[in-house]
Image 1 (spheres, rainbow, N blue to C red):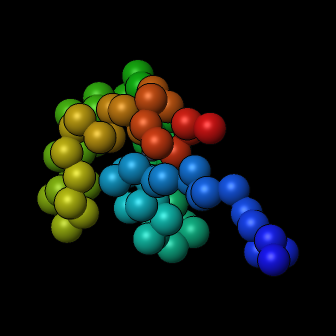
Image 2 (image 1 turned 180 degrees about the horizontal axis):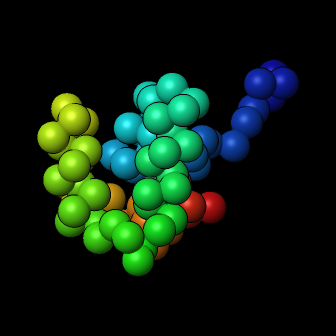
Length: 75
Ligand SMILES: [Zn+2]
């Protein structure tokens, strides 16, 4: 009866996480490096450049993901 009982999925990706998931591997690498490099990229500047390239992301969710305060890192 309970063979298929599984815990509810907690892996709720935030908007930034979903965008990262949608990229191919090389774009993903570039973006993850940019996210990690806070000396070079401000959240605001990075969000603006991503938007210029057609990705729908704003500073707020980007900054939350960057500081691991988003759904991706909640467990
Ligand atoms: Zn996230």
